[in-house]
Length: 148
Image (cartoon, rainbow, N blue to C red; front, side, top):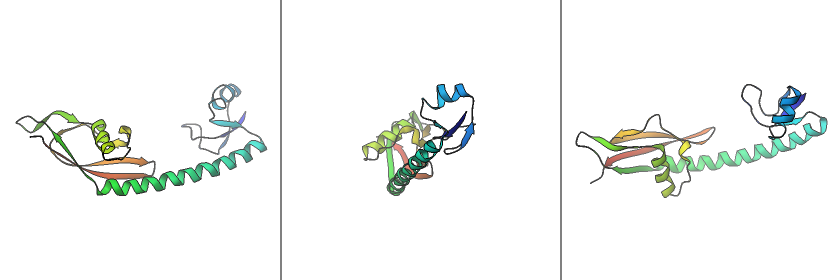
């Protein structure tokens, strides 16, 4: 069965591709989950209109992500943490804690957007990447200091 993909699907194709798939896969998975349209001229025209709307929305999302990037780049986040005598923290600074602090500052950032290879376990200054949009990343300056 020929279908028009409405979303990017790994190992299958990108949005807008016209591909052949097995009938059962199309009828039982792709079409009910709104991942594809059955191929026809009217559905192809329908997809073109939908694509224009999606691209417009994507552009708006990217513009707002760029404005948030400027705010985050100018921000220097300071976290006070308790620590041992040897300089290690009692706990660690995780993605969740960083996103909570950003939310307190009025920036709605999901913890999955904070790109942290491993939790921070020592005091110091760090630069953390924050993913705001698939094409927009911001560098957050983070200082972890001793809580008195």
